[in-house]
Length: 135
Image (cartoon, rainbow, N blue to C red):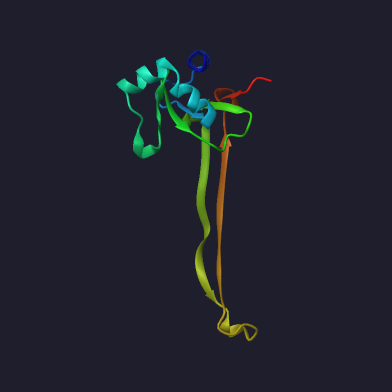
C-alpha cells in the first residue's frame, strides 16, 4: 500500500541519519488520491492537520505532505529534508528603468534592466528519495 511504502521510505531515511524533524514529502495528485483512500492516512489526518499556510495537506510517518503536480508522469513522491539543499536567490544588479531617449535612436523609449542570480543544489543526494511508478 502507499502508506506502507512511505513508512519504508521513513525507515530508509532514518537509517542514513536524516533528522526526523522537518522531513517533507511531495506527492503527485494520483498518489495524494491514494492517500485519501488510505485508512492510516485518514486516521492520522483526523488527529493532526496539515499546515494550511505553508500548503501542507497533511502528515504521514513523520513527513509533512505537500501535493505537487510538477513531479513528472512517472514520479509518485519525493521524500527529503531541508538540511541538504542549498538555494541562492539574489539580485546581482537591481532591476531599474533605463531612459533611452538621450541616445538619439529611441524617442521616448525606456528599457527595464537588471540581472537576477539564482541557483539550487542538492548537497547530499542519497538523502533524497524519489519513488517512481513501477512498470
